Length: 99
Image 1 (cartoon, rainbow, N blue to C red):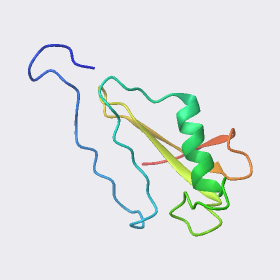
Image 2 (image 1 turned 30 degrees about the vertical axis):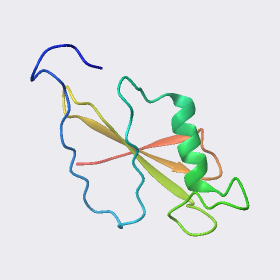
Image 3 (image 1 turned 135 degrees about the vertical axis):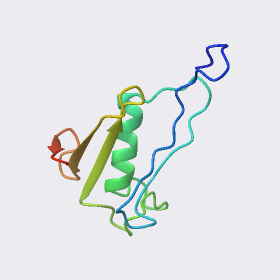
Image 4 (image 1 turned 120 degrees about the vertical axis):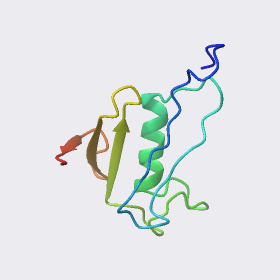
């Protein structure tokens, strides 16, 4: 959200490595937007299964992904956490250990 001060925004570049091109989603968020739990759940559902037989929402083929990795990044501290989410239980997030 615009704070009215030049050079104070927290926008940073996050470099993503070690992934298969075409198997990652991202979204441009409009000004003032925030990521809600419902929005994230919609993304997980779309990645893990076809919700409409006439449309393909996934980058994982016609039947979706069996697992999704979510990476949450804090722009203040540059710390992050990664979670594994299986398609058969989108509400169960398992912390992935990282170095």
